[in-house]
Length: 160
Length: 190
Image 1 (cartoon, helix red, strand yellow):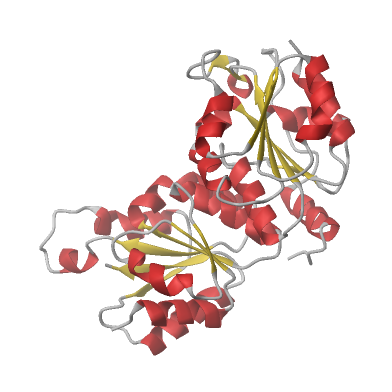
Image 2 (cartoon, chains in turn green, cyan):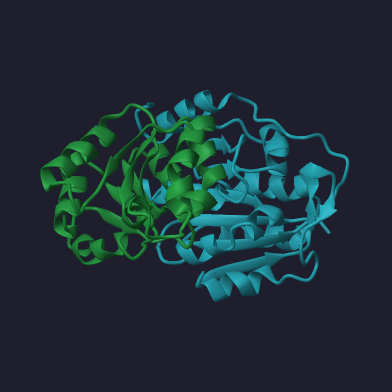
């Protein structure tokens, strides 16, 4: 089990400077730990906006991480395309995949899990999966460090 | 009513060492007024993302003044960005070029053209300093004050709509723009 403290610690250890994020019911559990962290949390109103803010941060030399639910990722498509493929900035993201575990067990009609990986692939973004319910904090540190070390854009699909 | 070009001429006279981020129609006009490495022509762009880009730059480089030139069409696509920006005390100057049109696509009116009170929207979003100018003389008089001091600042410029203008293009490739900007603001180019 990977809790908020481990998540925030992994982000800090990897060298991210800012977390630009719109919470969902899973990602939102990090709020308390973020408040006391070295990361500067930035709260936009919408997910595409988060991506634009991250672009400005990168232009200014910061190393932001953007976190959002897959529904917001769907909305943010043009912003992601622009920053990753027009500006060619190393946009790093964590995308929570709503209902992923229930989907795997055939217990949800939510179509988010069906589309999430397909949409990420359509934008040609390299990604890894992470499931905080079954993966260890050590595994998280590894996958976050790998994300941070990528020379270009990339993301982690976060099982919910 | 002032023209878009006239509005930018006044801005050019008062921009000092601010970064200037241009979007859409302003990309086609600003290069005739300035060729500073602190000019960033955000094209190709994602429409409505100029203000978030400028905010991110401000947050990464405390104290760096950033002017974002946005059109009314672009701002309407992302009005929440004003609420976001208002959370931070940064020298971000949002200059709205309001011509009531989607100029680049042929001059179709934007939603609410001529009826939307952008100053009230900005104040309601929490932006503390809001200015409106609908004549060239008033903009000339107020530009120096509105483009200095604590931010964020919202400047609403009502300009004449113009149709039939060429689709703008940035004067340099994006990679070169990024390199120039980062060198100018003291960041190592990636």
